[in-house]
Length: 535
Ligand code: NOJ
Image 1: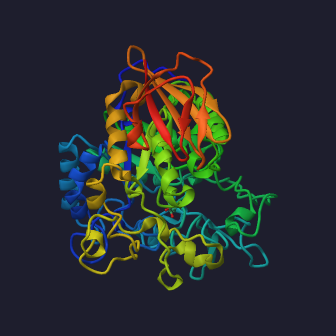
Image 2 (image 1 turned 90 degrees about the horizontal axis):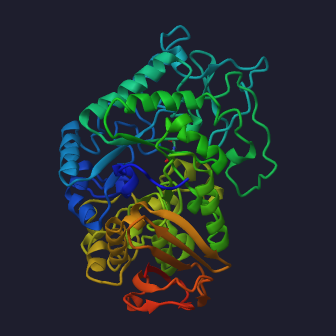
Protein backbone atom coordinates (compact mmCIF):
# COMPACT_ATOMS: atom_id res chain seq x y z
CA UNK A 1 0.00 0.00 0.00
CA UNK A 2 1.69 3.21 -1.13
CA UNK A 3 0.64 6.78 -1.91
CA UNK A 4 0.79 9.06 1.04
CA UNK A 5 -2.18 11.42 0.79
CA UNK A 6 -1.85 13.71 3.79
CA UNK A 7 1.10 15.77 4.96
CA UNK A 8 3.83 13.43 6.23
CA UNK A 9 4.46 13.22 9.94
CA UNK A 10 7.94 13.81 11.36
CA UNK A 11 8.58 10.14 11.98
CA UNK A 12 7.58 9.25 8.43
CA UNK A 13 9.81 11.71 6.62
CA UNK A 14 12.65 11.60 9.14
CA UNK A 15 15.64 9.43 9.89
CA UNK A 16 16.13 7.90 13.33
CA UNK A 17 19.58 7.55 14.91
CA UNK A 18 20.06 5.07 17.75
CA UNK A 19 22.41 6.04 20.55
CA UNK A 20 23.65 3.41 22.98
CA UNK A 21 24.30 5.92 25.78
CA UNK A 22 27.05 3.95 27.55
CA UNK A 23 29.15 4.16 24.42
CA UNK A 24 28.45 7.51 22.81
CA UNK A 25 30.31 10.20 24.75
CA UNK A 26 31.59 10.31 28.30
CA UNK A 27 31.72 13.74 29.95
CA UNK A 28 33.05 12.96 33.45
CA UNK A 29 35.89 10.50 32.90
CA UNK A 30 34.20 7.45 34.41
CA UNK A 31 34.55 5.56 31.14
CA UNK A 32 30.79 5.40 30.54
CA UNK A 33 28.89 7.64 28.17
CA UNK A 34 26.32 10.01 29.66
CA UNK A 35 23.67 12.64 28.89
CA UNK A 36 25.97 15.69 29.08
CA UNK A 37 28.17 13.79 26.63
CA UNK A 38 25.28 13.33 24.22
CA UNK A 39 24.47 17.02 24.61
CA UNK A 40 27.98 17.90 23.43
CA UNK A 41 27.44 15.86 20.28
CA UNK A 42 24.03 17.17 19.23
CA UNK A 43 25.56 19.52 16.68
CA UNK A 44 27.33 16.55 15.12
CA UNK A 45 24.00 14.75 14.79
CA UNK A 46 22.31 17.78 13.32
CA UNK A 47 25.09 18.19 10.80
CA UNK A 48 24.96 14.50 9.95
CA UNK A 49 21.39 15.05 8.83
CA UNK A 50 19.41 12.66 11.00
CA UNK A 51 16.17 14.02 12.45
CA UNK A 52 15.36 11.95 15.54
CA UNK A 53 17.41 10.35 18.29
CA UNK A 54 16.45 7.13 20.06
CA UNK A 55 18.24 6.57 23.36
CA UNK A 56 18.65 3.05 24.70
CA UNK A 57 17.59 3.01 28.40
CA UNK A 58 18.94 5.72 30.69
CA UNK A 59 16.88 4.93 33.82
CA UNK A 60 18.24 3.83 37.21
CA UNK A 61 19.33 0.24 36.85
CA UNK A 62 21.67 -2.30 38.42
CA UNK A 63 22.94 -2.65 34.81
CA UNK A 64 22.74 -6.43 34.77
CA UNK A 65 21.50 -6.04 31.20
CA UNK A 66 22.99 -2.56 30.78
CA UNK A 67 19.84 -0.61 31.45
CA UNK A 68 17.24 -3.03 30.09
CA UNK A 69 16.74 -3.97 33.74
CA UNK A 70 14.98 -0.89 35.11
CA UNK A 71 14.72 -0.17 38.83
CA UNK A 72 12.88 3.15 38.49
CA UNK A 73 11.03 4.18 35.34
CA UNK A 74 10.82 7.85 36.26
CA UNK A 75 14.38 8.88 36.87
CA UNK A 76 17.85 8.88 35.32
CA UNK A 77 20.66 6.59 36.40
CA UNK A 78 23.43 8.63 38.07
CA UNK A 79 25.88 7.06 35.61
CA UNK A 80 24.08 8.94 32.86
CA UNK A 81 23.25 12.13 34.77
CA UNK A 82 20.18 13.64 36.40
CA UNK A 83 16.63 14.50 35.47
CA UNK A 84 17.82 18.07 35.07
CA UNK A 85 20.42 16.88 32.54
CA UNK A 86 17.65 15.07 30.75
CA UNK A 87 15.45 18.16 30.64
CA UNK A 88 18.34 20.18 29.22
CA UNK A 89 19.03 17.51 26.63
CA UNK A 90 15.39 17.40 25.55
CA UNK A 91 15.25 21.18 25.23
CA UNK A 92 18.45 21.28 23.21
CA UNK A 93 17.31 18.43 20.98
CA UNK A 94 14.11 20.30 20.25
CA UNK A 95 15.93 23.57 19.72
CA UNK A 96 17.80 21.95 16.88
CA UNK A 97 14.55 20.78 15.32
CA UNK A 98 15.27 17.17 16.26
CA UNK A 99 13.02 14.68 18.08
CA UNK A 100 13.77 12.46 21.06
CA UNK A 101 12.57 8.87 21.42
CA UNK A 102 13.05 6.99 24.69
CA UNK A 103 13.35 3.27 25.22
CA UNK A 104 10.42 1.90 27.20
CA UNK A 105 10.86 -1.55 28.73
CA UNK A 106 7.38 -2.66 29.80
CA UNK A 107 7.81 -6.45 29.66
CA UNK A 108 10.05 -6.74 32.70
CA UNK A 109 11.62 -4.72 35.48
CA UNK A 110 14.83 -5.18 37.41
CA UNK A 111 14.56 -7.52 40.38
CA UNK A 112 15.59 -4.43 42.36
CA UNK A 113 12.52 -2.45 41.30
CA UNK A 114 10.36 -1.65 44.37
CA UNK A 115 7.43 -3.37 42.63
CA UNK A 116 9.31 -6.66 42.51
CA UNK A 117 10.81 -6.30 45.99
CA UNK A 118 7.26 -5.85 47.25
CA UNK A 119 5.92 -8.67 45.08
CA UNK A 120 8.48 -11.19 46.28
CA UNK A 121 8.15 -10.19 49.95
CA UNK A 122 5.23 -12.56 50.55
CA UNK A 123 2.54 -14.51 48.79
CA UNK A 124 -0.03 -12.10 50.17
CA UNK A 125 1.75 -8.97 49.01
CA UNK A 126 -0.62 -6.54 47.27
CA UNK A 127 1.82 -6.63 44.36
CA UNK A 128 2.20 -10.42 44.28
CA UNK A 129 0.11 -10.56 41.13
CA UNK A 130 2.19 -7.87 39.38
CA UNK A 131 4.62 -10.59 38.28
CA UNK A 132 4.21 -14.16 37.04
CA UNK A 133 4.41 -16.47 40.06
CA UNK A 134 3.72 -20.21 39.75
CA UNK A 135 3.83 -23.22 42.01
CA UNK A 136 6.35 -25.97 41.45
CA UNK A 137 4.96 -29.19 40.01
CA UNK A 138 4.36 -31.94 42.61
CA UNK A 139 7.88 -33.30 42.01
CA UNK A 140 9.33 -29.85 42.68
CA UNK A 141 10.20 -29.14 39.08
CA UNK A 142 9.53 -25.92 37.18
CA UNK A 143 6.00 -25.01 36.21
CA UNK A 144 6.51 -25.39 32.46
CA UNK A 145 9.28 -25.66 29.89
CA UNK A 146 9.61 -22.00 28.93
CA UNK A 147 13.20 -20.93 28.38
CA UNK A 148 15.07 -17.70 28.97
CA UNK A 149 16.37 -15.87 25.90
CA UNK A 150 19.67 -15.54 27.76
CA UNK A 151 20.02 -19.27 28.41
CA UNK A 152 18.58 -21.82 30.83
CA UNK A 153 15.08 -22.04 32.23
CA UNK A 154 12.79 -19.03 32.24
CA UNK A 155 11.75 -19.86 35.81
CA UNK A 156 13.59 -18.90 38.98
CA UNK A 157 12.80 -20.44 42.36
CA UNK A 158 12.13 -18.04 45.21
CA UNK A 159 13.18 -19.69 48.45
CA UNK A 160 11.28 -17.34 50.75
CA UNK A 161 7.86 -17.67 49.19
CA UNK A 162 8.32 -21.13 47.67
CA UNK A 163 7.21 -20.30 44.14
CA UNK A 164 8.82 -19.77 40.77
CA UNK A 165 8.74 -16.48 38.89
CA UNK A 166 9.09 -16.14 35.14
CA UNK A 167 11.80 -14.12 33.42
CA UNK A 168 12.08 -14.12 29.64
CA UNK A 169 15.58 -12.65 29.99
CA UNK A 170 17.88 -12.66 33.06
CA UNK A 171 16.62 -13.88 36.41
CA UNK A 172 17.31 -10.28 37.46
CA UNK A 173 14.64 -9.20 34.92
CA UNK A 174 11.32 -10.63 36.16
CA UNK A 175 8.43 -10.36 33.69
CA UNK A 176 5.49 -8.21 34.69
CA UNK A 177 1.98 -9.64 34.64
CA UNK A 178 0.32 -7.51 32.00
CA UNK A 179 -3.02 -9.24 32.59
CA UNK A 180 -3.19 -7.25 35.81
CA UNK A 181 -4.92 -3.88 35.15
CA UNK A 182 -2.87 -2.23 37.92
CA UNK A 183 0.33 -3.08 36.01
CA UNK A 184 -1.14 -1.60 32.87
CA UNK A 185 -2.10 1.61 34.65
CA UNK A 186 1.33 1.89 36.28
CA UNK A 187 3.07 1.63 32.91
CA UNK A 188 0.67 4.08 31.28
CA UNK A 189 1.54 6.51 34.07
CA UNK A 190 5.21 6.03 33.23
CA UNK A 191 4.47 6.88 29.60
CA UNK A 192 2.55 10.00 30.64
CA UNK A 193 5.42 11.12 32.86
CA UNK A 194 7.79 11.29 29.88
CA UNK A 195 5.16 12.49 27.41
CA UNK A 196 4.35 15.40 29.73
CA UNK A 197 8.04 16.34 29.60
CA UNK A 198 7.75 16.50 25.83
CA UNK A 199 9.37 13.24 24.76
CA UNK A 200 8.36 12.53 21.16
CA UNK A 201 7.95 8.80 21.31
CA UNK A 202 8.99 5.41 22.61
CA UNK A 203 10.81 2.43 21.26
CA UNK A 204 9.03 -0.37 23.08
CA UNK A 205 11.29 -3.22 24.13
CA UNK A 206 10.22 -6.79 23.19
CA UNK A 207 6.67 -5.76 22.44
CA UNK A 208 5.75 -9.27 21.29
CA UNK A 209 6.70 -10.74 24.68
CA UNK A 210 4.42 -8.58 26.79
CA UNK A 211 1.62 -11.05 27.47
CA UNK A 212 1.75 -14.83 27.83
CA UNK A 213 -0.63 -17.75 27.49
CA UNK A 214 -2.89 -17.60 30.55
CA UNK A 215 -2.80 -21.41 30.85
CA UNK A 216 1.02 -21.43 30.78
CA UNK A 217 1.10 -24.29 28.31
CA UNK A 218 4.43 -25.85 27.34
CA UNK A 219 6.14 -24.55 24.23
CA UNK A 220 6.67 -27.17 21.51
CA UNK A 221 10.13 -28.23 20.33
CA UNK A 222 11.66 -26.38 17.39
CA UNK A 223 12.36 -28.93 14.65
CA UNK A 224 14.82 -26.51 13.05
CA UNK A 225 17.05 -26.23 16.12
CA UNK A 226 20.78 -26.70 15.57
CA UNK A 227 23.44 -26.90 18.27
CA UNK A 228 25.15 -23.61 17.34
CA UNK A 229 21.91 -21.72 18.06
CA UNK A 230 21.07 -20.10 21.39
CA UNK A 231 19.48 -22.63 23.77
CA UNK A 232 16.30 -20.51 23.75
CA UNK A 233 15.74 -21.61 20.16
CA UNK A 234 15.24 -25.23 21.21
CA UNK A 235 11.54 -24.45 21.59
CA UNK A 236 9.09 -22.46 19.51
CA UNK A 237 7.85 -19.73 21.86
CA UNK A 238 4.26 -19.99 20.69
CA UNK A 239 2.76 -19.80 24.19
CA UNK A 240 5.19 -17.34 25.74
CA UNK A 241 5.18 -14.67 23.00
CA UNK A 242 2.99 -13.07 20.31
CA UNK A 243 -0.30 -13.87 22.04
CA UNK A 244 -3.51 -12.48 20.52
CA UNK A 245 -4.16 -10.39 23.64
CA UNK A 246 -0.98 -8.39 23.12
CA UNK A 247 -2.81 -6.26 20.59
CA UNK A 248 -5.23 -4.98 23.24
CA UNK A 249 -2.25 -3.79 25.24
CA UNK A 250 -0.64 -2.12 22.25
CA UNK A 251 -3.94 -0.38 21.51
CA UNK A 252 -4.13 0.88 25.09
CA UNK A 253 -0.58 2.18 24.90
CA UNK A 254 -1.47 3.86 21.65
CA UNK A 255 -4.46 5.50 23.30
CA UNK A 256 -2.17 6.99 25.91
CA UNK A 257 0.13 8.36 23.19
CA UNK A 258 -2.75 9.71 21.16
CA UNK A 259 -3.66 12.05 24.00
CA UNK A 260 -0.57 14.02 22.98
CA UNK A 261 0.01 15.52 19.54
CA UNK A 262 2.32 13.80 17.06
CA UNK A 263 3.84 11.25 19.42
CA UNK A 264 4.88 7.86 18.13
CA UNK A 265 5.69 4.33 19.16
CA UNK A 266 8.12 1.87 17.60
CA UNK A 267 7.72 -1.78 18.54
CA UNK A 268 10.72 -4.04 18.87
CA UNK A 269 9.35 -7.23 17.33
CA UNK A 270 11.34 -10.12 15.92
CA UNK A 271 8.66 -12.04 14.02
CA UNK A 272 8.02 -13.22 10.47
CA UNK A 273 6.52 -10.37 8.48
CA UNK A 274 2.97 -11.74 8.33
CA UNK A 275 2.88 -11.66 12.13
CA UNK A 276 4.79 -8.39 12.28
CA UNK A 277 2.10 -6.63 10.26
CA UNK A 278 -0.54 -7.34 12.91
CA UNK A 279 1.32 -4.95 15.22
CA UNK A 280 0.21 -2.00 13.09
CA UNK A 281 -3.11 -2.70 14.80
CA UNK A 282 -6.67 -2.68 13.61
CA UNK A 283 -7.29 0.53 11.66
CA UNK A 284 -3.66 1.45 12.26
CA UNK A 285 -4.22 1.83 16.00
CA UNK A 286 -1.15 -0.15 17.01
CA UNK A 287 2.54 0.61 16.82
CA UNK A 288 3.32 3.37 14.33
CA UNK A 289 6.43 1.47 13.32
CA UNK A 290 6.77 -2.23 14.13
CA UNK A 291 10.52 -2.53 13.60
CA UNK A 292 11.31 -4.28 10.33
CA UNK A 293 14.48 -6.29 10.91
CA UNK A 294 14.64 -8.13 7.59
CA UNK A 295 17.85 -6.46 6.43
CA UNK A 296 19.51 -7.77 9.59
CA UNK A 297 18.39 -11.30 9.00
CA UNK A 298 18.38 -11.99 5.27
CA UNK A 299 21.44 -13.30 3.50
CA UNK A 300 23.11 -10.41 1.66
CA UNK A 301 21.72 -11.50 -1.66
CA UNK A 302 20.19 -9.08 -4.17
CA UNK A 303 17.39 -11.34 -5.31
CA UNK A 304 16.34 -12.35 -1.81
CA UNK A 305 16.44 -8.79 -0.55
CA UNK A 306 14.48 -7.46 -3.52
CA UNK A 307 11.86 -10.17 -3.03
CA UNK A 308 11.63 -9.43 0.68
CA UNK A 309 11.10 -5.73 -0.03
CA UNK A 310 8.28 -6.57 -2.42
CA UNK A 311 6.67 -8.91 0.08
CA UNK A 312 6.93 -6.36 2.83
CA UNK A 313 5.47 -3.60 0.63
CA UNK A 314 2.69 -5.95 -0.41
CA UNK A 315 1.77 -6.93 3.13
CA UNK A 316 1.67 -3.45 4.66
CA UNK A 317 -1.83 -2.61 5.85
CA UNK A 318 -3.65 0.46 4.54
CA UNK A 319 -1.91 3.51 5.97
CA UNK A 320 0.88 1.40 7.47
CA UNK A 321 4.21 3.22 7.12
CA UNK A 322 7.30 1.08 6.36
CA UNK A 323 10.65 1.20 8.13
CA UNK A 324 14.09 -0.35 7.73
CA UNK A 325 16.92 -1.18 10.10
CA UNK A 326 20.54 -2.14 9.32
CA UNK A 327 21.93 -2.42 12.81
CA UNK A 328 21.24 -2.14 16.51
CA UNK A 329 22.84 -2.89 19.86
CA UNK A 330 21.81 -6.56 19.74
CA UNK A 331 23.15 -7.45 16.31
CA UNK A 332 26.51 -7.68 14.54
CA UNK A 333 27.40 -4.45 12.76
CA UNK A 334 26.69 -4.24 9.05
CA UNK A 335 30.35 -3.53 8.18
CA UNK A 336 31.33 -6.78 9.87
CA UNK A 337 28.61 -8.72 8.10
CA UNK A 338 29.13 -7.54 4.55
CA UNK A 339 32.53 -5.85 4.55
CA UNK A 340 33.66 -2.27 4.38
CA UNK A 341 32.95 -1.66 0.70
CA UNK A 342 29.61 -3.39 0.64
CA UNK A 343 28.55 -1.46 3.77
CA UNK A 344 28.53 1.64 1.55
CA UNK A 345 26.05 -0.05 -0.76
CA UNK A 346 24.03 -1.08 2.30
CA UNK A 347 23.88 2.56 3.43
CA UNK A 348 22.61 3.51 0.01
CA UNK A 349 19.94 0.84 0.27
CA UNK A 350 18.85 1.80 3.80
CA UNK A 351 18.59 5.48 2.93
CA UNK A 352 16.74 5.10 -0.36
CA UNK A 353 14.12 2.53 0.55
CA UNK A 354 10.59 3.69 1.21
CA UNK A 355 10.02 4.14 4.91
CA UNK A 356 11.75 5.43 8.02
CA UNK A 357 15.37 4.29 8.34
CA UNK A 358 17.10 3.74 11.66
CA UNK A 359 20.87 4.29 11.68
CA UNK A 360 22.84 2.67 14.51
CA UNK A 361 25.48 4.94 16.06
CA UNK A 362 28.89 4.39 14.53
CA UNK A 363 27.58 2.76 11.38
CA UNK A 364 27.86 6.14 9.70
CA UNK A 365 31.65 5.87 10.07
CA UNK A 366 31.69 2.18 9.23
CA UNK A 367 32.57 0.98 12.73
CA UNK A 368 33.20 -2.74 12.83
CA UNK A 369 32.50 -5.32 15.50
CA UNK A 370 35.43 -5.10 17.89
CA UNK A 371 36.92 -8.36 19.13
CA UNK A 372 36.59 -8.44 22.91
CA UNK A 373 38.93 -10.82 24.78
CA UNK A 374 36.97 -13.43 26.72
CA UNK A 375 38.06 -12.07 30.07
CA UNK A 376 36.65 -8.63 29.15
CA UNK A 377 33.21 -9.79 28.01
CA UNK A 378 30.45 -7.79 29.71
CA UNK A 379 27.26 -8.83 27.95
CA UNK A 380 25.20 -11.35 29.96
CA UNK A 381 24.12 -13.07 26.76
CA UNK A 382 27.77 -13.69 25.93
CA UNK A 383 28.68 -14.69 29.48
CA UNK A 384 25.76 -17.11 29.86
CA UNK A 385 26.42 -18.99 26.63
CA UNK A 386 30.22 -18.67 26.27
CA UNK A 387 30.53 -21.41 23.64
CA UNK A 388 28.07 -19.79 21.20
CA UNK A 389 29.79 -16.51 20.36
CA UNK A 390 26.64 -14.56 21.20
CA UNK A 391 28.14 -11.62 23.06
CA UNK A 392 26.73 -8.32 21.87
CA UNK A 393 29.72 -6.35 23.18
CA UNK A 394 31.51 -6.16 19.80
CA UNK A 395 28.73 -3.98 18.37
CA UNK A 396 28.55 -1.78 21.49
CA UNK A 397 32.07 -0.36 21.65
CA UNK A 398 32.70 3.36 22.22
CA UNK A 399 32.09 5.80 19.41
CA UNK A 400 35.26 6.83 17.61
CA UNK A 401 35.32 10.61 17.56
CA UNK A 402 38.84 11.86 16.98
CA UNK A 403 42.57 11.26 17.35
CA UNK A 404 42.77 11.83 21.07
CA UNK A 405 43.33 8.92 23.46
CA UNK A 406 40.27 6.62 23.48
CA UNK A 407 39.13 8.38 20.32
CA UNK A 408 37.85 11.27 22.41
CA UNK A 409 35.19 9.07 23.99
CA UNK A 410 36.52 9.31 27.52
CA UNK A 411 39.46 10.63 29.48
CA UNK A 412 39.13 7.61 31.78
CA UNK A 413 39.17 3.88 31.16
CA UNK A 414 36.45 2.98 28.68
CA UNK A 415 33.92 0.41 29.96
CA UNK A 416 34.54 -1.61 26.80
CA UNK A 417 37.71 -1.49 24.73
CA UNK A 418 37.74 0.56 21.54
CA UNK A 419 38.50 -0.63 18.04
CA UNK A 420 42.26 -0.92 17.48
CA UNK A 421 42.07 1.38 14.46
CA UNK A 422 40.32 4.26 16.20
CA UNK A 423 43.12 6.72 15.45
CA UNK A 424 42.54 6.14 11.73
CA UNK A 425 38.80 5.49 11.70
CA UNK A 426 37.01 8.30 13.42
CA UNK A 427 34.65 11.20 12.85
CA UNK A 428 37.41 13.80 12.68
CA UNK A 429 39.43 11.98 10.04
CA UNK A 430 36.38 11.04 8.00
CA UNK A 431 34.98 14.56 8.10
CA UNK A 432 37.97 15.73 6.12
CA UNK A 433 37.77 12.97 3.55
CA UNK A 434 35.07 13.47 0.91
CA UNK A 435 35.19 9.76 0.07
CA UNK A 436 34.74 8.51 3.62
CA UNK A 437 31.78 6.56 4.92
CA UNK A 438 30.80 9.60 6.98
CA UNK A 439 30.84 11.89 3.96
CA UNK A 440 28.79 9.33 2.04
CA UNK A 441 26.22 9.29 4.85
CA UNK A 442 26.02 13.06 4.97
CA UNK A 443 25.49 13.32 1.26
CA UNK A 444 22.94 10.51 1.27
CA UNK A 445 20.99 12.01 4.15
CA UNK A 446 21.03 15.46 2.56
CA UNK A 447 19.80 14.08 -0.77
CA UNK A 448 17.08 12.06 0.90
CA UNK A 449 15.84 14.98 2.94
CA UNK A 450 15.94 17.30 -0.10
CA UNK A 451 14.13 15.08 -2.56
CA UNK A 452 10.45 14.33 -1.97
CA UNK A 453 10.65 11.21 -4.14
CA UNK A 454 13.33 9.69 -1.91
CA UNK A 455 11.70 10.83 1.29
CA UNK A 456 8.10 10.00 0.66
CA UNK A 457 7.73 8.63 -2.87
CA UNK A 458 6.43 5.27 -4.00
CA UNK A 459 8.68 2.25 -4.32
CA UNK A 460 8.73 0.64 -7.75
CA UNK A 461 10.74 -2.55 -8.17
CA UNK A 462 12.62 -2.64 -11.48
CA UNK A 463 14.99 -5.58 -11.53
CA UNK A 464 16.92 -8.09 -9.43
CA UNK A 465 19.36 -10.90 -10.18
CA UNK A 466 22.14 -12.72 -8.37
CA UNK A 467 24.22 -9.63 -7.91
CA UNK A 468 22.22 -6.49 -8.42
CA UNK A 469 18.93 -4.87 -7.66
CA UNK A 470 17.29 -1.79 -9.13
CA UNK A 471 14.25 0.20 -8.06
CA UNK A 472 12.65 3.57 -8.60
CA UNK A 473 11.33 6.03 -6.08
CA UNK A 474 8.84 8.54 -7.36
CA UNK A 475 6.53 11.19 -5.99
CA UNK A 476 4.03 13.06 -8.11
CA UNK A 477 5.42 16.23 -9.62
CA UNK A 478 9.00 15.62 -8.45
CA UNK A 479 12.14 14.22 -10.09
CA UNK A 480 12.19 10.41 -10.04
CA UNK A 481 15.22 8.41 -8.93
CA UNK A 482 16.53 5.04 -10.05
CA UNK A 483 18.72 3.14 -7.62
CA UNK A 484 21.08 0.52 -9.02
CA UNK A 485 22.96 -1.47 -6.39
CA UNK A 486 25.57 -4.14 -6.92
CA UNK A 487 25.44 -6.37 -3.85
CA UNK A 488 28.34 -8.46 -5.08
CA UNK A 489 32.07 -7.75 -5.20
CA UNK A 490 32.35 -8.34 -8.96
CA UNK A 491 31.57 -5.96 -11.81
CA UNK A 492 28.22 -6.38 -13.48
CA UNK A 493 25.86 -4.77 -16.01
CA UNK A 494 22.40 -3.38 -15.69
CA UNK A 495 20.39 -3.25 -18.86
CA UNK A 496 16.94 -1.81 -18.14
CA UNK A 497 14.09 -3.26 -20.17
CA UNK A 498 12.69 0.22 -20.43
CA UNK A 499 15.10 2.21 -22.67
CA UNK A 500 13.67 5.50 -21.43
CA UNK A 501 15.39 4.98 -18.07
CA UNK A 502 18.11 7.57 -18.54
CA UNK A 503 19.48 10.23 -16.33
CA UNK A 504 22.36 11.69 -14.40
CA UNK A 505 24.09 10.03 -11.47
CA UNK A 506 23.17 12.17 -8.46
CA UNK A 507 25.12 10.15 -5.92
CA UNK A 508 27.29 7.05 -6.03
CA UNK A 509 29.45 4.98 -3.75
CA UNK A 510 32.34 6.10 -5.99
CA UNK A 511 32.15 9.86 -6.27
CA UNK A 512 33.96 9.84 -9.63
CA UNK A 513 30.77 8.69 -11.28
CA UNK A 514 28.58 11.48 -10.01
CA UNK A 515 27.37 13.89 -12.65
CA UNK A 516 27.78 11.33 -15.44
CA UNK A 517 24.87 10.71 -17.75
CA UNK A 518 23.76 7.11 -17.92
CA UNK A 519 21.30 5.29 -20.14
CA UNK A 520 21.17 2.01 -22.01
CA UNK A 521 23.45 -0.50 -20.35
CA UNK A 522 25.01 0.68 -17.09
CA UNK A 523 28.30 -0.88 -16.03
CA UNK A 524 28.83 -1.22 -12.32
CA UNK A 525 32.00 -2.00 -10.42
CA UNK A 526 31.97 -4.54 -7.61
CA UNK A 527 30.43 -3.07 -4.43
CA UNK A 528 29.09 -0.15 -6.40
CA UNK A 529 25.77 1.56 -5.99
CA UNK A 530 24.29 4.63 -7.59
CA UNK A 531 21.32 6.95 -7.43
CA UNK A 532 20.27 8.22 -10.84
CA UNK A 533 18.07 11.26 -11.26
CA UNK A 534 15.86 10.23 -14.15
CA UNK A 535 15.21 12.58 -17.09
C1 NOJ B 1 15.74 -6.25 23.75
C2 NOJ B 1 16.87 -5.31 23.89
O1 NOJ B 1 17.14 -4.71 22.66
C3 NOJ B 1 18.05 -6.10 24.43
O2 NOJ B 1 19.22 -5.36 24.42
C4 NOJ B 1 17.69 -6.57 25.81
O3 NOJ B 1 18.73 -7.38 26.30
C5 NOJ B 1 16.39 -7.35 25.82
N1 NOJ B 1 15.38 -6.72 25.05
C6 NOJ B 1 15.86 -7.48 27.21
O4 NOJ B 1 15.35 -6.26 27.64
